[in-house]
Length: 354
Image (cartoon, rainbow, N blue to C red; front, side):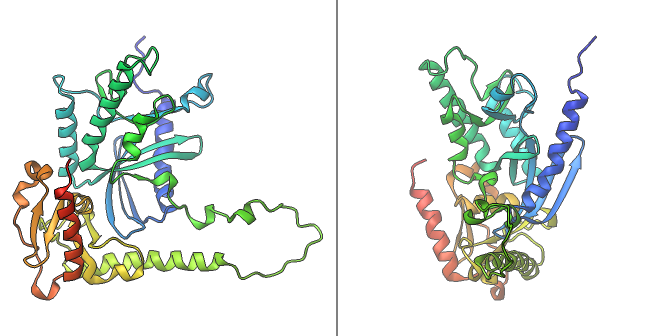
C-alpha cells in the first residue's frame, strides 16, 4: 500500500493554522484584513499597525506533533520549505525564480508561521527582497558549524533539506542559524510584537489574586483606558492615512503606475513614530514590492526632480525604473523636507559596503 503524501491529520492541522492567521494579525494591530485561499495556498492583504498595506504569502512551518513521544524534541526547532525541490541542482536560481513568481502576483512579503496547539509561537514577516540573502546566510552558517564539528553527528545542511530549500526560524542546537533570519534587516517578528490590549495585563494585574472575598469594588481611572484610546486613535489614523493617500494619487502607484488596488500600499516617507507622521504630504502610494524596497533604502527618490534612483543590488531586476519621475502633479508633490531626509538615508545605504 502506498503511503499518502498528506494524511488527513496533516491537512486538518494546516486548515486550523491557516484559520488562525487572520485573528493573530488582528490582535497585533493589523486591520482591513483580506484572507484569500487557493488550494493549499494563502495570501493575506492587510494594513499594518504602521498604516502600510501589505500583501503577504503565508508559509506554514513543519507541523509539531506535540502529543507524540518526540513532543519535547520537536519544540526545539522550527522550519519551513521555500519550495518542494530545486531545478537542476540550482538552489539559488530556483529560489530566485520562486520569488519572481510571487512578485508578479503583487506579493511583497512571505509570512512564516509556526503553531503549537492553539497558539502561534513564531511568525516571521520577511520582505521578498531579503529572502534569498537570508537563505544564503543560513546555508553558509550551517556549513561552517558542521565543518567545525559543532553539530555533532549532523551532516545535513540546515538550508538544504534533501532537495528542498528550507528556512529556519528556530534550532536550539544552532542558534546562529535562526539568528540569520531574526537579526536580518527588514524582518519582523510578529509573535513578539505588541499584542492586542485584551491579551495583555499590567504586571500588577497579572499577579493579583483572583479572590476578592471581603473586598468592595472601587472604580479606578488608570492608564488602561488611555492605552486603549490611544490604540483606537492610531488604528483609525492609519486607515485614514491610507484612504487619504489613495485619494490623493488616484489609486495608482507613483513609481510603476500599477492600478491593482490589492497590492497598493500607503508608505510613510519618514518612518511612522506618531500621529503627526501620518500627514498626507508624508505619504506615497506604492506597489507592495516597491514599498518594501523603499523601506529598505534600496530605492531612493531624489527630492528636487522626484527621480527614482536604485541601489546597485536591485538594478538587474528593477533597472527599468531607474530615472523615472514620480507620477504626481506639482500640486501633489510630497513634502520636500521629508524626501530630503529619506534620500539622505538612501545615500548612506549606497555608501555602506555590502
